[in-house]
Amino acid sequence: MIGRFRVRTDLAMENGEKFEKDQVEIPGVEIKKRYNRAREVWTTLVKIETEQGARLMEKPMGTYVTMEAPNLAVPDEEYHREISQEIARCLKKMLPKDQDCSVLVVGLGNRDITADALGPMVVDNLRITRHIVNEYGVAAMGEDHVIRVSALVPGVMAQTGMETQEILQGVVEETNPDVLVVIDALAARSIRRLNCTIQLTDTGISPGSGVGNYRTGLNQETLKVPVIGIGVPTVVDAATIIHDAVAELLESLEESEMDEFLSELISPSMMSMYVTPKDIDETVKRLSFTISEGLNLAFSSTSQSK
Image (tube, rainbow, N blue to C red; front, side):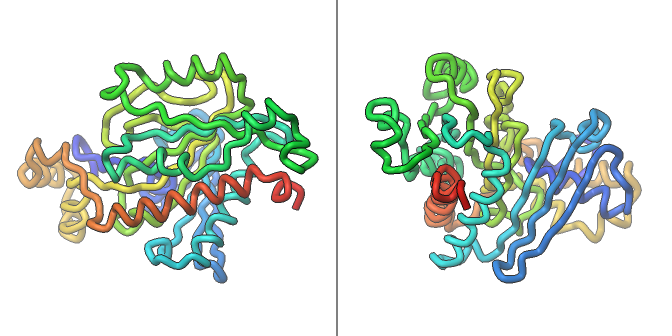
């Protein structure tokens, strides 16, 4: 959408699609797509290399890897295991090369709201090792090298009265992790990408941005440590659904006519509404297992050596 009816999305690849549709090359942005036929997964790599590219894409400079796996909606354990392996492969490329590094995993979101509970649920299923290594050494894990994994679920401001960034700054200063991996629920531009798309980025993440509740960004600039963001779109805004329903009509209108039409069609109250699928409880639980297993594989020294 245009004007004040811009469709919200946290996916870099969706911001790039508007240029692809018009066959316009984006200066300072490299986009590559790959299809894994065996796993039925489309992987889109977006590299934003210049400030101009960042302005056009409306995303910070950095690397964004997006996996589209429609079959994630199916409760197939073998398929989800394959996606976990793909997550691990992509994540390891972003992690420090040091096999004995320390990783702090942060599960963002509100555990009491299912569509926003992905981060906390991923942390619930992680293999936490930092305390064991600190107490007994690497030998206690039976491996030569161990990535020390710690985790935190900071909650949301309504629960704590604090910015997530404020909480993490204190934890980072005390525990000195080499990298943060932050998990959060996102918003998508397309309904078909809900709960079956995973984005990994080395640019960090902005808590609450998916629903327009912008908080201080979690990135290397604010936390003084590299931040990897992992997210799954679990909601779309109501304006997206309306836009998709009348997409063919909108294409025939001029920009001014389109904005006027949408202003009459979409009430102000609707602009603050977000929609999630009815099976969100089961889906988020399944996705949390898939992502946590991907993280466990990526942090495993056995997996690192392969």
